[in-house]
Length: 318
Image (cartoon, rainbow, N blue to C red; front, side):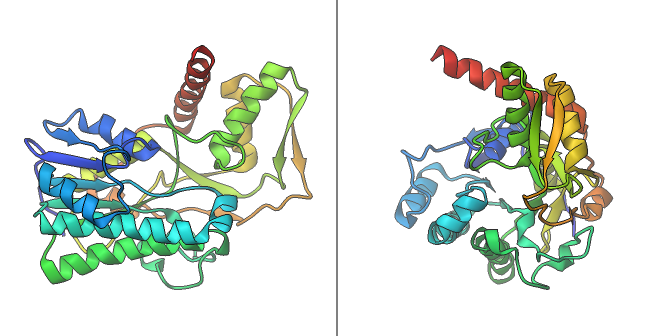
């Protein structure tokens, strides 16, 4: 089911505005004739129901984009499973319930492609949800995100709330996490190539064979898709948001090295695992509605690299 929802004149709350996704949504909403509302962690702890209720009662947002979450890599998920499950359940439950009680006209819940079964058929369609076991290394985060989808569906069914969900693929871009211990593959490669270039190193090393295929979407494309869905989508089912194409890790490494200007060799550590051979989502549902990504991978990596260098410069000057 589709419809036309006008953001003009609305008060739009972006939960998680300091994260990579939330900040991209704030940037995109600047093009809309709306008032963007944000709240720092010091202003409201989203895990605390009373604090969230009080903030919603005072600010009365018309629209909510739920991009707030506790996130991290495999090590963090494995080390802090209780926090990943509890914190994310509390954040989404508190915001969704407050949005209902304060009469928000629209809510978009943003999840993650990790909600899908580990061995889901490729490309992964929305209907694959709950058809098999999850990837054990991030199941705590995935279970919380699945609960968020189900909350939106339940509130739509019981209360008639226009709450929708979108599931982005692997994201990258300005505001990404470049900590090698916790970052994902794209920011890790950008940092490795940059540091190798500065050090005059002969080579950089990637894990495994470099043959696994992964899909990437620039975070500004996700933000644009989010605004598109707020305006034009109103239905029970969640929507995949991806680029529709994938690339091998080896090819990605070559692309990143080209953008960064590192000309050394790319070594492969075959003692390290490859991980899942392929992870590609089907975005046919969204593409069929008339939206498509606009940022190519080369241009996107270049923008991410500029952001990384600018962040390093800012730290050096601080």
